[in-house]
Length: 170
Image 1 (cartoon, one colour):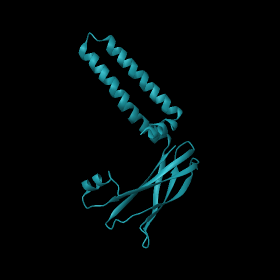
Image 2 (spheres, one colour):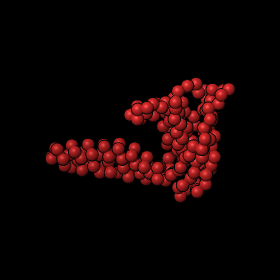
Image 3 (tube, helix red, strand yellow):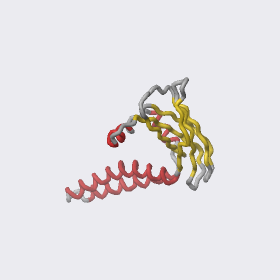
Image 4 (cartoon, one colour):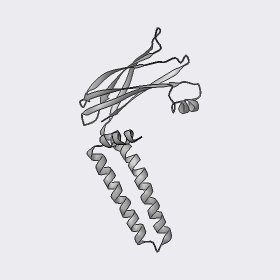
């Protein structure tokens, strides 16, 4: 857990610091305003609840949307093949940098999900993949595309399945 937190902090960029500091300043302002208006109890409670919800929701939603905008990319699965002599699936795809910045690294992840005939069950099955595999691609300049090959092993599932590929770039 502490390794994940330290990795998250090490990967922050200047825009993250600006976002989090702005949200923290707004949090403090709402708290101070709630303390000043403590005679109006309902308004003070609403302001304090707004401060905490702004801090939690604003930081998670803002971080996600900001990184989605700053590090925009496209992934494409070109082909997939289930190997016959080994228990593996090979996925060929590409990652394209469509942002205005060069990517220092991209974590490309392929996930395999069970497939059913029910669309609601398919949605639930997407929450827990059968198998997933990730690789790191480094230095992708803007408007460039990089070919990737992921080998997902061991893969022993015999039924129908879907494969998705996504990239988290920095």
